[in-house]
Image (cartoon, rainbow, N blue to C red; front, top):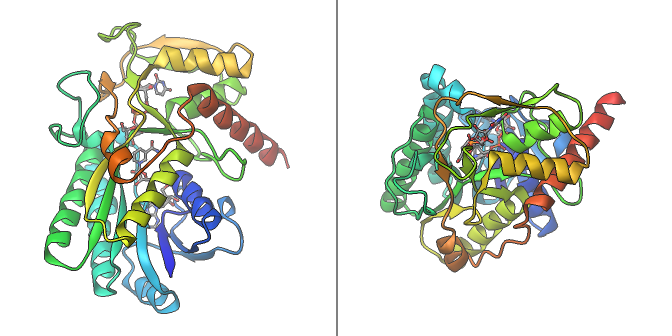
Length: 330
Ligand SMILES: NC(=O)c1ccc[n+]([C@@H]2O[C@H](COP(=O)([O-])OP(=O)(O)OC[C@H]3O[C@@H](n4cnc5c(N)ncnc54)[C@H](O)[C@@H]3O)[C@@H](O)[C@H]2O)c1
Ligand SMILES: O=c1ccn([C@@H]2O[C@H](COP(=O)(O)OP(=O)(O)O[C@H]3O[C@H](CO)[C@H](O)[C@H](O)[C@H]3O)[C@@H](O)[C@H]2O)c(=O)[nH]1
């Protein structure tokens, strides 16, 4: 049996591919390489360069592989970009996911894992860790495009012989502890990635977006989860569905938050050198505090996080940033 990974050449998808290979699974990848890199994957992985909505490609991939599960990462992920060009986000994240789900049903693929996001909650009503039952109120087209896909999956699972797991990721960060892949996105906007670039001198400084929020130090609070723990949650979801588990939606985070300034202090401590930090105005659309309640994932998926340690997350991110710097010099 083969696991089909869409977006497998991207940041999280490439960690998933390595985790599947480590677990002895056969893997095939579809990626159009809009933000991903073929070199993020081992050469022996079956790689199909193309679009997740391309029906001719579906026919080829399903004919050449005996696929029992799809893990669907492919999508567009920049929140402000989704605000300025919402239809592009509904196209790539919602319409194209529909085409992929239809292909899964047409080809009788019984298991599907979907990359959802904490952005489906918008700003929670309280700063307490959010449960999956919290109000769903996305603040951006990005969050809405993901929520619409969750709804399609729910309805498809009711109508067809099809089981899914939607994982709502919180703030994914860090890199493979073995150094095989990491976040290589050009022009990334994620805090730990940007801080790593500033620490290594790839940027002149980092801006702190907003210092007057109602939090202990005035900066926003997020639940940073190591990308390898996240990949492991997908393996657990797969295992559970293969054992007959029903469709579920689960948060993936650790259940504790760090402020932007706490993260930057940690980056300085781990790196051992100063870098320039500019206090700036708020970034539109940022929630003040969002932290996961991961009890459902722990209970239902038997998920046991291994890297719940901000210093370790930052260390792996910095190691990968240094690797990229060496790679670019070659
Ligand atoms: N990074 C985070 O913090 C975060 C948080 C929550 C959810 N997610 C979700 O996780 C998934 C992966 O995110 P990432 O950070 O790895 O992003 P990424 O941009 O590194 O990876 C996305 C991959 O999908 C590919 N892709 C995009 N559209 C495609 C299409 N139509 N057909 C084929 N390939 C396509 C890209 O080339 C890229 O390799 C996304 O669905 C994202 O919404 C990410
Ligand atoms: O250079 C930067 C980058 C970020 N931040 C701040 O750091 C915090 C975290 O920002 P990120 O951009 O790293 O992450 P977000 O919380 O905005 O969003 C991320 O997590 C969301 C889920 O909560 C979505 O899934 C989304 O795709 C993903 O980018 C925010 O307060 C942001 O304003 C800065 O101060 N400076």
